[in-house]
Length: 274
Length: 224
Image 1: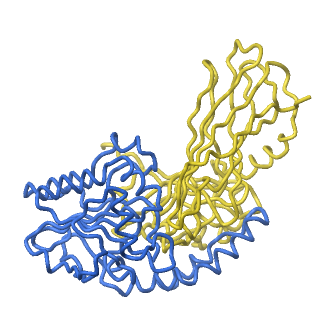
Image 2: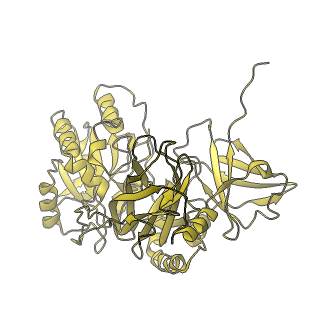
Image 3: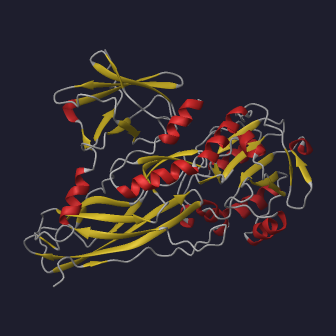
């Protein structure tokens, strides 16, 4: 019996020819995993899109950095079905062709919840298309894959991918909430970032890698590290040459690779008239 | 600046599985030439909006020397290219780039397509072969320049392909950035994007100021 009926279509060869004449394939394969092949009406189902990169190739994070293109999903769900936003784990930083980028290598899981409609009966075929740009030191190749998943109405039963998906959810950045607040002071060319710890904040933030999720605010060549400053943690970083001033938002992802990454967002204080 | 780049090069993070670690080491080793390139870039006089565009003297695919000084009183466009790059393909296969080249040539603009791929790097072809590939892609530039040593690209800080620059008749740099607003590799997105580069060039030709002179270019890294 098929526990999880998942149709796996490997990456569509985009017919690309690199400058050296090698055929391109998107340099990665994608498929769609589900924690259960059955779901109850109106109850979210945990799924994950998996991208397996060829060795030495990477795709891009939501903030791709100086070049590249974020991976995107186009949903083709039946009427009444809803999807969440695919979650991305903390990226790794690359410097290729002199350009600083944020991306993912190896096997990448993007957890995403899918919710059937309240009147869900029988079996539904869910479809989505994923597009990515794979790059290496040798060049870049776009890739895309048609994904599909069959889900039957009924009590959820953990399938073979359930544990893997749960592990992937643990790697997703979660809002720091009350535990950490970010403030940003903008000068002409730089930003002073301050993290103000609250209840149950991590004891040490100096070892966290810090990635700007918001694009074009911090120069991607910057290695952001916070240092203790009184009760708080501070970092001064160069602004992106494309930053629009005054800044409207900055979201950072802080990862120490031991705990789930944290996400903090700053918005300028609203200017109230006195 | 030096230390920032050195640090960054090591900032390929400890990661969650062995595949990543392995890749990290590979990336580290392969970074050495990249870092050298980055230093060269720092020492070069970088192009800046409103300042005199850096001079250059580079051979075209026919072996003729082409210099910025040859085009006094002309509006000059520089377009960095690499036909192996999906973002370049987007603008050639959709016909967008050749159409722009043709349109502005008719208005007296000098269009210089530049390939800065170093010999042995992706996107490099010997001049005669390069000319053939460019023709095959419908390139209608005034000259196709072989910046194989990367000097011209580094002087302009050309980061990606395609990366576009506009030099005013008076020799000042007036545009540095993207061809349009949509950083995708899909041909169908050309029609709906904001035409940042063409709008800038139209403004220059109309004797107006460029309102959006520096935009973030998108594409593949130049293979110096």
